[in-house]
Figure (cartoon, rainbow, N blue to C red):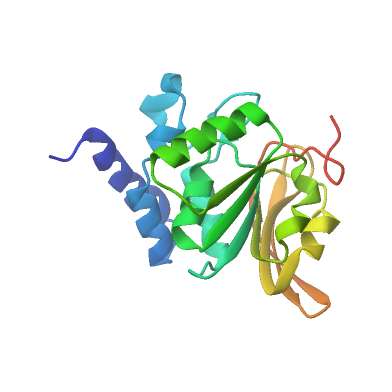
Length: 215
């Protein structure tokens, strides 16, 4: 028997994802299958599939479902991709990345958030995710280069170390702008050049770190 969350998940994908123009079937299927309510705190579980970002802990958020879908579609993920995620957060975006790629290295500066996400993701059976606690603006040089890089917090500009750690023909997605309003930027690396393409407006929590915003 289909439970309420499965019904709500289908409605979310139909009304918030497909209706707004997301066409990548792999992204659509991932969002149909991944239980978003498991990544939401109990007090907000009734809104787990609503068209909004939700608070988590330590001043962070789980992104609006549509924004997750947009960023994931822009990444053009393939099953052999090695992905670097900046900002593990709740782990919901991480789950989608892990479902669509070979391996995911995810960095979170807040240890408790990283540990909670790891517990949730491990319970769902993911074995291709590697967790790092630290300054995400520095990337993770040890396993570079990465085929795809996604930044899930707003930055004043794309951190230089992340551009340096992007593989040739790789794609990087990040919200860039002020602390309170950003544009998604898609960067494609071609040899020693970076091709910038801008997408939709957005609002993310600030990316803190050496190459981001300061506290």
